[in-house]
Image (cartoon, rainbow, N blue to C red; front, side, top):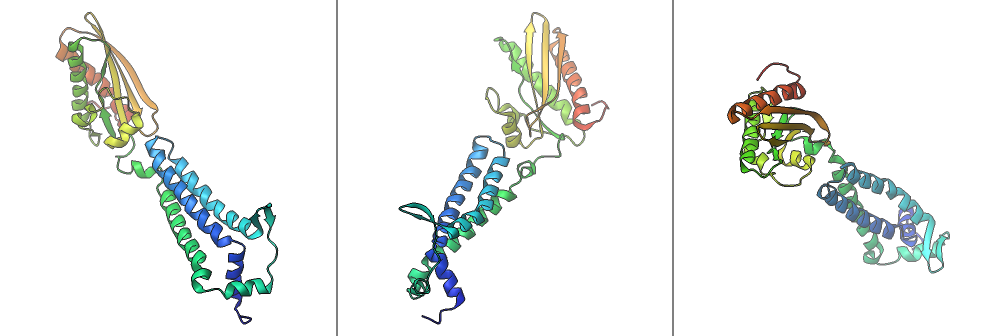
Length: 271
């Protein structure tokens, strides 16, 4: 085996220094961590950048792991600097059977391909990807059922009717997509983050509000929320005398939508 090539000796040196083993273990472990992060981040509603940060860190750390494996070795005495190889040591490794000689190399190659493939998949899933299915920012909205701050069933009917009137008025705004009532009202009584609502309904904004009645007086509060970041874009409060329910619902809906139209589309025209 004295005529072994430089390539064979180099591969033998990689095996002697346990570089191939380190590559296989690092790639497999990093792939598992990236997969866990990619799954847990949306499940726990963590920032999307966290999964990409994990993938980026793992990829950047790969060459450092290889370099450390080349220079140092883990022994019973701890981490020590790897001694230079003798010709006899390299020739002995080259003389091994192909199965024993190339097993670690093939495993390292497969693990590396899977690792970098997984890293590319996570990094390409940019924050804009989940929002790609939404309409342009500010051009889609879901109207949630207004919360009734009393136990009177009549107030619930009023609140639902008001929300439906707002939806109907919003539907008349050109180029504005309004989520269906059945979809929006499915979130009634559910403590769900507004960002998740926006994701599930495919809208950029969410309108929520509350209704409080005292005698013949009714107070309505409405808030427009950015469904991407959860920030409030607009809020207003209205008070009316509850004489004709339908007339009050229509008046409040028009008042809310008139102000919303400016925020959503920049159009000051009526609806």
